[in-house]
Image (cartoon, rainbow, N blue to C red; front, side, top):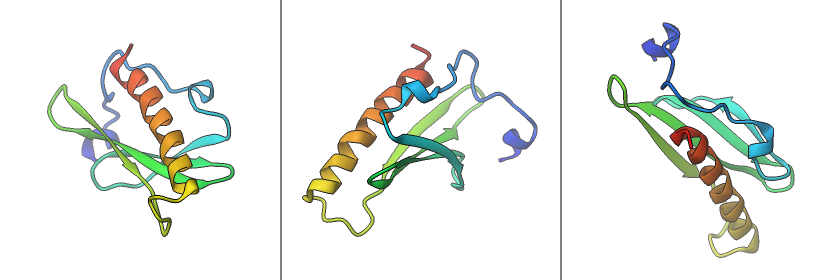
Length: 101
């Protein structure tokens, strides 16, 4: 976390995520994760979808890790499948921003 406190830029060339990059009714907020910079994604109807953590693994290297939040939902339930589908869309869009494409 020291590199965040020092104001070190995560990686040159990253495109900032915009609200238009997210599916309808999805919001992003800062969260806490001991591994690195964390963003939590919520859906207006389905609640927490998951989190994406940006982990610094070297001087110029970052790892993006996505964690789907299932809570108490049965993985085969309709709601769980919808949350997974929406979060996969979020991860794809964030990945495009992360890769600078």
